[in-house]
Length: 84
Image (tube, rainbow, N blue to C red):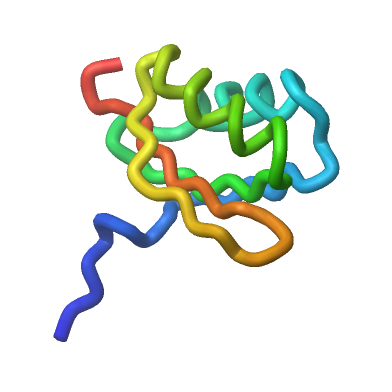
């Protein structure tokens, strides 16, 4: 059985301890460096970061595919659109 590359991130960004809006800015900059269609996993703190960053990314045209609660942080999977 072949592992699907759909949910395997192409890059990871650990932004735990990073305040808003710096975490959004860093996520956006990292996505802009990536190839269209690639997937970035971002680690965010609970509270304001996980409440703000996914919405901000969606408004900026990125596709938030999954948010996983990993107990003391959240793992966010966001895809850079192909037609960006």
